[in-house]
Amino acid sequence: MRRRLPLVLVGCLAAMTSIALPGAGASTRRTTFSTCGSARACGGMKALIQAAEKEGKLNVIALPPTWANYGTIMKQFEHKYHIKIADADPTGSSAQEIQAIDQLRGQSRAPDVVDVANSFAVTGVKTHLWAPYKVATWKTIPAAAKTPKGNWYDDYGGYVAIGYTAAKVKNPPKSFADLLRPEYKNEVGINTTPTEAGAAFAAVLAASIANGGSLGNINPGVNYFKKLAAVGNFVPTKADPATVENGTTPIVIWWDYLMESEIAAKLPHWKTVIPSDGSYAAFYTQAINRTAPHPAAARLWEEFLYSKEGQNDWLKGYTQPIEMQAMIKNHTITRKAEKALPPTPRGAVKLATPAQLTRDETVLTHTWSTKVTG
Image 1 (cartoon, one colour):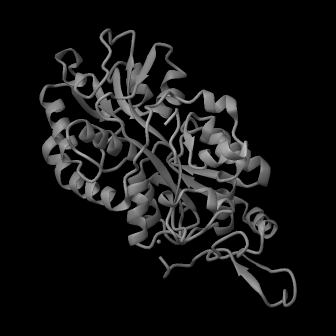
Image 2 (image 1 turned 30 degrees about the horizontal axis):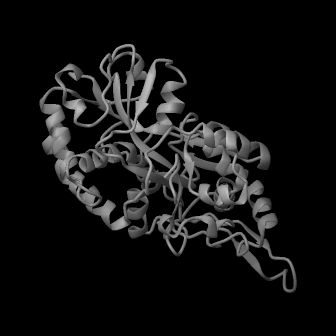
Image 3 (image 1 turned 180 degrees about the horizontal axis):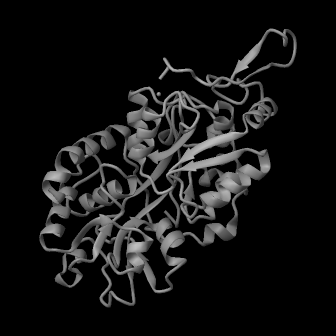
């Protein structure tokens, strides 16, 4: 690979926006936007836009403006469709997104859509959280990156990387094995508990691969972090740009694209490396809340994200959009943004399957607190 990845409840008052479909019988045929599974089924893009603009609002959650260029994406959507976006808990985790759907079900401030780690999207299918919907560019999303019915679909991704402050870390780590060195005492952090956030989950899975584990066998990664904590190098706090700047976590295991957009942009001495002993790539995932208070706006948001404009906006956030290969083939990709992507390992990328992620999530749930932070 060359610098790229080849690649819900119903007992509440579900919000419903309806308009008459054009053509014969339009006076009696109406579209229910809380259940239509494609723009065509919603009466076409014109009808979907009309209904979404009538709703006038979209509730998102846990989208920091600097994460994957979401600040720009949200502003463009608001300007294009005159729909106000309410972003609840911008620094929240995937687990908190799911909690918000459960706790706010039936309320006007419930999330309309989510952007979660794939393992949480998989779990959401089992608990009937998602409304199936297929965007117009459905065929350009790889089969392994979506469910056949459209319950969820991957959006953007990258590699787990080790980042460090070059001004403080004089002997740069290049691997997970390096991070066990005594010189890194109280310096290594991840972005929160791996049972709650996808980036932290990925850090443990990458560590597992580096220590004889594999996709679906995350236990060696848990044991690695247990050892990292035992030698005094692991900092059990939420690592973020603030903890990097104040020196609490001069070394962070995080997504490569977030290193670029959230840390390197602020700290000129920040450096990033893909671990030589355990590279792991993954995508985040989009899904629509089955009981979204603004169902038309939710579907229009997905259409925007998976359009040429939306995909290139994610690319400008140093991420690899899921439709990237199709964009390259169709010459619709922004070349300047493509060239600015963080360098990544060569070779094919193997993405974890839903079954493997579920198995790893179960292991983490039962072992992380007792082995690492307990």
